[in-house]
Amino acid sequence: MELVDLYNDRHEPTGLVSDKHSVPKGYFRVSVHVWIIDKKGNLLLQQRVSSSHKFPNMWANTGGAVEAGETPIAAAIREIKEELGLSISKYELKYIATYKRLIDYAEVYLLEKNINLKELTLDPKEVNDVKYVTQSEFKEMIKNGTGVKSSFDYFENYFYEMNREVKL
Image (cartoon, rainbow, N blue to C red):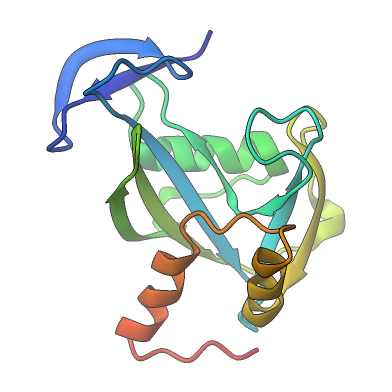
């Protein structure tokens, strides 16, 4: 059982904890979504395992639940290490946004880093495969049902608002 801190509808901690899969009505947990891009603007996606609780066999960004007593940034670093075997510093992550969903607040981060996929150590309990795709390719994957949309809108808006062009 993975415990998570509970928050109220104003994203304030309540001091209560719950199992991440049974958040009581009226409470929220916190999740992290990390979008990893290389210097060319390609997205690093991971394919979830077939036994995944949510979105089995689909391609998505790295992320997961913030555990009880953990900060979102620490959770992002932990998830990257657990799922991809990659060690990073908190200074490499850029905060993009927080948004409210049905049972959680999703905190979205960006990691700009050139990563050699052959050097990653994938967690076989969570990740089948990894690959780089362009933003256009990922939009197609979302349309054809093989990609998880999740926080992609926030990632995309981040670049638009910063007037930053990602080379595809």
